[in-house]
Picture: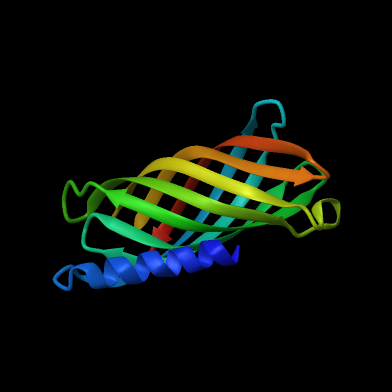
Length: 163
C-alpha cells in the first residue's frame, strides 16, 4: 500500500513539473454506483467512492480514490484504496468522453472479511457533461488467505459529480 501511495505521489510530481505551461488544478469526484456480480464468485455490491487529485490540462486527471463497497452476501464491507487515471477526449467545453483505470487494494472492514485484503482494479469508460458524470466498467476484487485466492468480478455502473 505504501508503494502505491509513493508511486502516485511521484507520478503527480513528475507530471506537474514536466511542463510548466500545462495548467494543473484540483480535481475531485464523488460517485454512487452498483456492481452486478458476474463469473464464478459473483457478488453484487453498492459502491460509494471519492477521488481527490489533479486535472492536468484538458486531457488527463489522476488522483487517489477511497471507497466503501457494501456486499449483499454476508453482508460484508470492503474499503478500496486506489490510484485513478483518466484520459479525456473533449468534444465541447461541457462534454468529454473518458477512459478510466483504477488500480489498488481492497481491505476487509467487517467481521466476515476482517483481515482479508487483495488487489482491485476497474477499467471503465464514461462521459462527463458539465459537472455530472456516468461510467460503466468491470470491477475485480481479489482476496487471498493461506494461499487460496478468489476474484469477485462485477459489471459496475456509477454516476457522480465532479468539482
